Length: 508
Image (tube, rainbow, N blue to C red; front, side, top):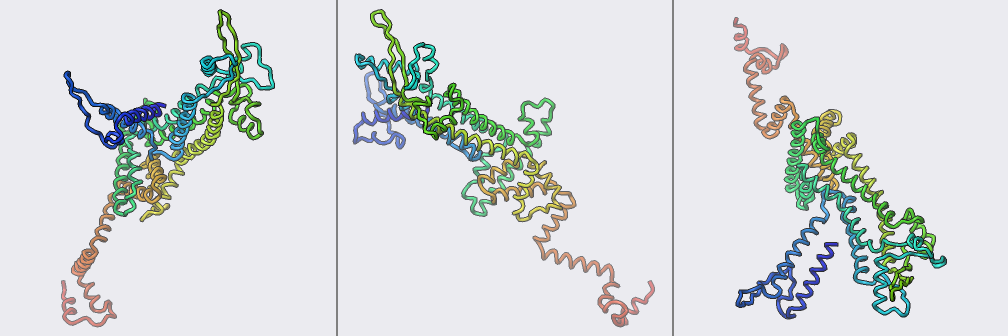
């Protein structure tokens, strides 16, 4: 409602300014395109800002504030579609409905009453205002009007004045969970929003840019996970407050916060049912949405159901010459025609959103908190890499990589990357993290062998020369072997030359 107020005030001020200026002057240009210097009229006591100059600065400041507010509530990519369906689309639809009802109430005629013929125009206006504020009551056309005042009060309808405010509260409640998520996410030490924005950059289509992005993201995730492990070793204590330290110690801070926010979304949308029923239900309609839908399917109109009635009765007293005269007039609540459709749509939408949010919450709880599903997700990511791990040989290392290195927060980040940027980027980042883990936990012997292999691959000619040199050294150390191989080897290889025979027969 405050945003609507800001927009209305800005539009009104702009219309007044444009109408007061000359049509052909430059001041008729849009305010946000250019700021013109203020005109100064000199007087004896100094000068003042010319007409329209101060307004333009004030309008620019108002638009800057309004733009900042709108940017703060726009959707981000550090959540999923169900979250945006709750805090952005649902709250936006509810705000539009609140604007529609408010316009009908405060700019139109929400109630029209049939007054006696002797009433003047002022008396008619007074009657309609009084009945709008004091509430009306509904009695079926086939029933008699109750004579007792307490029976009439039991039939009163007092919700239509508060419909815009109730809708605004509902929209605010839908936005609270995402505010909690954004605030607590900033305390995690993992820039999830920056990670996802960089992973979803369209320039990653080029291989070089994608390789650079993968290295940057893998290094950031590795540093963040190492910080969590160091935090757990330093902050281990019996008196861990709340679950912030517990989550960071077990590497599940972001995961627990996201699951908690999912639970808030579910509690919020589920509580909207009780808010609607508490606000609108009576003794005959304990379950508002089902009752209204059933009446519509059965062809029962508002005249018989009493839900959102269009025609009601209103009692008011007038003091004439010291005597109190009671009048009962019949009024038409045009606003109820809109209210019925709005709340019927909201009830059905909340029902669908409750089921969808519950399924989405269960999905995240199972896929992130269950170790078997976490391991299966990482295996699928590494299957399409350049050097996929062998389940039999690397099974133990892969299990430690998932449970001790990545832990729930690492799995959560990879799943968010998979949901927003696709499996290619997710697979490459997972493989880069797996490579970093293997290099970190490789034994010294394996590191030496790996270094020799890498040098062999890089310098194959030097390797061949080294092998020839080793063979020459071995031949020099064993001359008899060289002679045997040169003569054909063994006793069947032919006669030994005389020089070699005499040399070999010389006693040592």
